[in-house]
Length: 573
Image 1 (cartoon, rainbow, N blue to C red):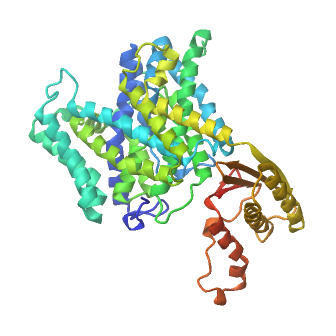
Image 2 (cartoon, one colour; image 1 turned 60 degrees about the horizontal axis):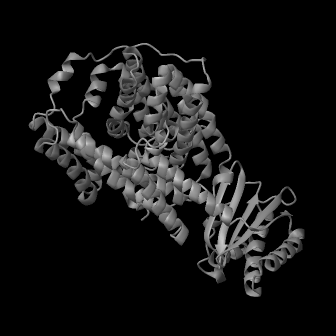
Image 3 (tube, one colour; image 1 turned 180 degrees about the vertical axis):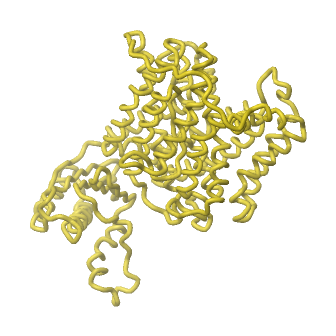
């Protein structure tokens, strides 16, 4: 299910022509701008906020989203992914934001958005301790939950709201059907050129159908100027915090944790679609994504608008078009910053006919599904991972329905139990944590680096065999595997005597699970290949022969560098 390299025209580091980057950026912005600018309006109206604060928050959301998208795309220091990852107003915070604005207006929401940001920064900093808990399986489950949450939103937009002229009408059905049919049809059966433009063509087809059916009036846009200043006034921050706001802070804190887990899933997904050749997940990129996401909440807070999140929808667009270049992300981010200063353009995007947006969103949900499945299947499906996926999806569907014991839980719990992504994501994380805790029993030790300490390593392996009651054949295979990694570490590129190698081994259902931790960056073991001709192999290839054979002895091999420390873990029968 991995992305075919022939479908990727421009990977993340490629330079695209400016005209192409601009048009691709427009496609991305058309998809997300209405959500970015309308969510603050929805929250403000539900909470009874002053109109001048609502208008300002709506425009500020575009600027804040553009700035945080630039941070994610360009990566400044440790902040940002370095990939085309768009940011915007977070629907996950919807219920919590409404409750907060009701209690203290937009100033309280802005202040709490800043105060919860360090939670995600701490999650990112301690990611090395969370890598066995927030796994690709959990990330894939989160992406599938995002897909499930998009479907009802798509249906609501497609059908329309009660009281509207075209609610539940043939016109809405045909308009949405035109958008989704063109989008999916060109993606499935179009050539490379048509796939490149299918999001824009699908959107144009939906708009044309809406215009034919009398649902879209272009002349209504003429009343708005091309350029204009921000409407409304900045709500500011509040320092009048009291004990009554603790439940609201707790609810936003839990949502921030779930938002961080979603950022991990999106970071994994964007890495998968941005390179022609498969690459292992880069956990430094995930850390940067989470740091950037947290910084985005701080920027949104000071801007007086609602918290933000990483957007999954744009990852699907990159996969469809085959354009993952960082240049596209930069162009899209600049457009997000500029649009609030152009009332005509921003109103054109905000007033897109809802069935066009609904049909288009349904198509993107279908395209996002394979990315989640790919993450899940990358580790294989076991009894436990299968149940984790099933339980988290069931919890998410029950929460998303809104009919699972409504009004039974207090507000501090309802704000995230009413969200399928939040509830299902929390279930996935809790189950993954329980799985990890039940598998931790085993053997832990450290061995100083250096070939002179090979006998020390062998003695520890012998102790593992005695403690876990392993058969002699399994002990020998374990010793060979661990010794090969140990020699690799103390060889060229290693650091004899500089650091100790941490070794953790446990036994679960007859399978050995081994983890080795070394405080330096090491070459990726998956890059070591068997020589095509052993007789003609040079000395360097023969030195790596043991590592190549090692990969045939173990399975589910992974290697990650987090905070300049290398983590290698694998399984053995």
